[in-house]
Image (cartoon, rainbow, N blue to C red; front, side, top):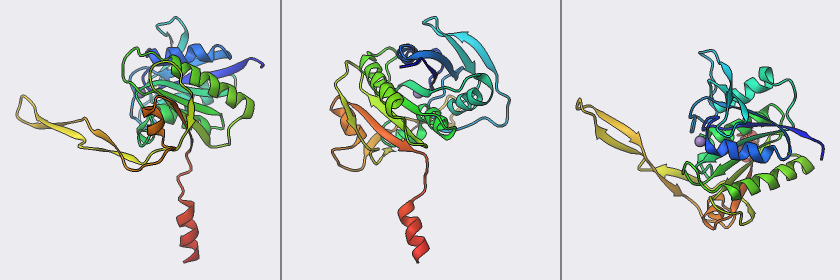
Length: 249
Ligand code: MN
């Protein structure tokens, strides 16, 4: 395999444990460029910055690798990388390794997935990788092995235009991949309401994750069983079945 150029992004910030684990796997395949938010940007979804300027600063990750820290969202990082910061066209965009699951409806809130999606919008093959524990330094060996397998697969076969791979893997050693679909799910009992020292109410999101369907091909189920879940995801939100019906009426 010829040496590849791989852009690595995330939503937890350039200093997170997970992005270093992913950058190290990427470096097995070629030249790695890390361009990531300068601060925690989890659950910003596909937000972009339009009211303030963006800055991009050269930094070192805790593992000593070079990175560029952007004062924006994950989608900003990929857009800015594509338009201004890179003098080469990356062969692949990787996002992660996120600390926390991006399976089920989390996919929609996720900054990690959105960095990959932005890559796909700009025409690059892209993979999002998340570890389903929020620990600061979990055993990400299974996540890394999953990333390796998916990187090889994508370099060999490519991805359809507009589709990314969303991988969610439990902490611990690799137990195999299950190809899955996004489980219909949502959060319930979302906010903890409290009273501040000045006697004003405030609300803090806590939320219980609820799965709304059964099925042996669900992403959340594969994770529960200890497997790496990989879902192909597309950003075309059109409901084609209803579109057809509306036209026929
Ligand atoms: Mn995150």
